[in-house]
Image (cartoon, rainbow over all chains, first blue to last red; front, side):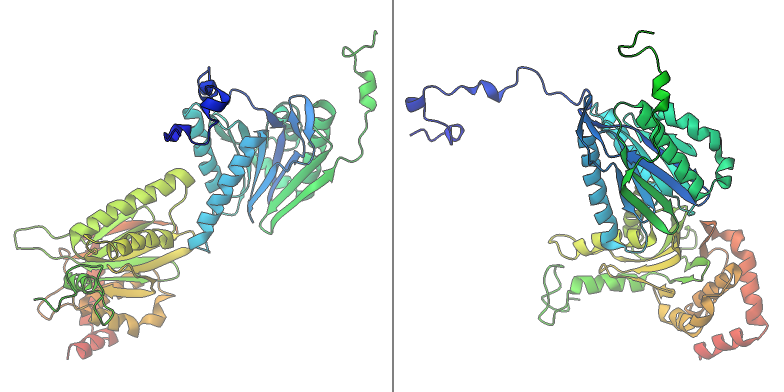
Length: 260
Length: 255
């Protein structure tokens, strides 16, 4: 019998022939993520005078295939912060576990103070920047929505490069091109936020979700929406787009098979 | 000098269930000059007596600002306090860097308490020989924490540690109810009076031997020494000389 540890649990050479060890080494070197695999599309968010509204659809695409249709991409962190994830879904799940452990660590010792949206945004942006500096980025674009230390509405983004910025309205992915201009019509700057009511903001974000569904081929009509105010987080995860009208599609020319 | 066989290290209990090394460390705190701390609803104040080894030497630092929102006052081995304060500075900075958050005072107190406790449970280590008062303001308002070499920490409304601090504590206990509503200047006066109580008869509070640290809501923690505290000392002394009830109290305690 061969007593060497490397032979343990292997087929016997005298019975099965010499063991083929080729699968122990890969021909290619180890690689970090070069592109996302299963992805979520846009996240849109807008501030209003008492809080923030944030929404994302429930679809996770595998390339152009609508692979998973019940993926929740908004994550409530505590009673004043919600994080929205665009991009790779497995990296989103990793960040979800990271936030879980952070939450447990925070609540283990001191019960009274917890991290606000600004704290969480700083933390997540450091995580993203660290990973991109390791040439191993988390392939996500995050929106962090909630209240800051003064209980004022807070909305900011962090992306896979560790870039951060803040604006009264934000959208990731396709939404950055399609939803952002629509939201800017109503909320052009920080001063305008004071004139926006909760209902205004909700209908604005819902309108954006509808436009995105019309135009973004990786989107879906089922979505999650969260409203963060001093009263807490109202998170609904099974909203559906209402009052769709595809009449505009008739007039689209230049795609598909039509001739004129 | 040896009290018994059970005081050679901090990992052995005496048959009475005591750890003598830890108790000796607490004695080191009582050798240090007195420091007091008080909190009101808006401010946290530290006041301390500084000692100089000889006439020609400088005074030993007693209050160390750690971060912009809090500071510590120490009684006992100053070198141990320096090690602890460096650790606290690092932790505070790390909190600002990763979370953009002023570290909660309860949190930083817990972290040094854990370090101190470890020293009482590992062979070859010795407990810290310093007691600290940690005072400042975080998102939940002003706080004062007391830290002991055993790793025990407590949140306090008012506290005094160090040599003859019992006198200061007696003063603080007597005025306990008034602290909550005190303004900044009033709180400083209380701290200075408490400090004065534990001073021996032949000694006075001067601009050279007194330190004051103040943190408040919307106000960074700041250390005041030298001529900066002259006005407060004068104001506090005036009351004493004026022969009002404050002066009367002092006389009673001394007799």
